[in-house]
Image (cartoon, rainbow, N blue to C red; front, side):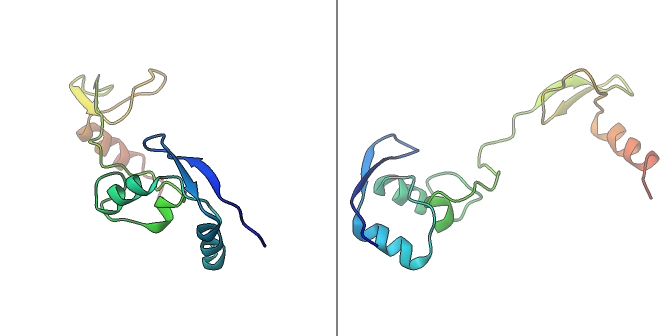
Length: 117
């Protein structure tokens, strides 16, 4: 198979970079199915621990692999009122109002009383 240089845009900084024919051949030999999504500079930053993920560096992530859903950002908490005891509670989601939301104590109590086993 013949390969030709391709210009791609970095998903982090937006800079265009060249995915060379040689790199494409290397990817094919290694069985990589996704093309890179970051420029060399952003790959190096990510590799040295400068961003994303659960701490370590993964080739799969850098080359357009699946996002594992974890983030190094602190979890955003939202204030609500417990549907059981009426105390103020912090929850990691935006309460929609169509379901009861409990503080951590009442949530644990609720789980124990509605055990499926």
